[in-house]
Length: 63
Image (cartoon, rainbow, N blue to C red; front, side, top):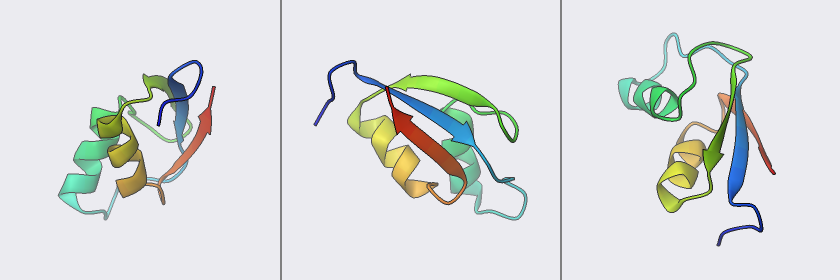
């Protein structure tokens, strides 16, 4: 279910070192490159799925 603006701010808070390869791919797919890097992504089912998969590495907030 989309929100009013359709955007989510995602921040990487933990390192991807030692994580599963597919989880690293999700982090890169969201556009994150390093710890404390933030991006604003569209609120789509595919992006929500990636955020849910790697939620232990991220902090997210709905804009």
